[in-house]
Length: 206
Image 1: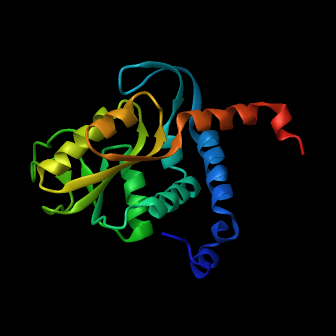
Image 2: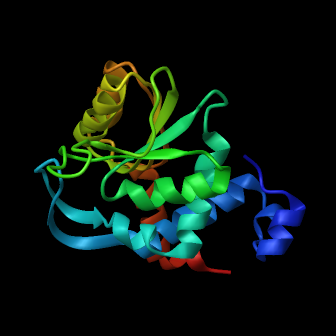
Image 3: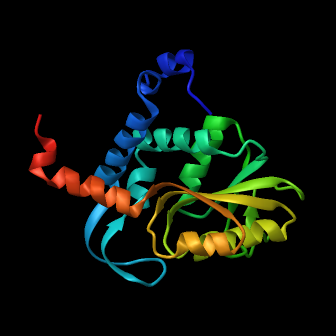
């Protein structure tokens, strides 16, 4: 999905005046500036790490979230009927993408709730629909694959899993092995290079 001149002017956004490559590079820098943290962390996979991309820091900045949704929209497959996002981190992304495209979405719970509809899927989902799953950060992909299994168990078909960041720790291979296409906006190695360039005075000379 592309941004029209009228839409860009109406929103005050500069996207239409930028080369797509420049727009993506600028977004990569802003994701790193917003969400890259150094320290001792334990990832959702249980692995230890000396840095962390805090998804909530880029998911809760409207100027970053809007541009992430725009880039995701440009890469959505043409035949998709609905998008899906696992709770909790992917919900802002999925909501923003739904607003960007007009595409309906469903939220995938980690566990079946014990009240009301007693379901793991929040929102409408119909058998036979083509679904793209949206993730924030993929490490081993265990959560993404569990969410995809929930969607397929309901009779829909997941064709693609998209993510903002692939940490390149086996998640992409696991997704491919499960039969899904994987499309991350950014790979960890790319974002670490962006971070290194920002720290290097030689890279910031006029």
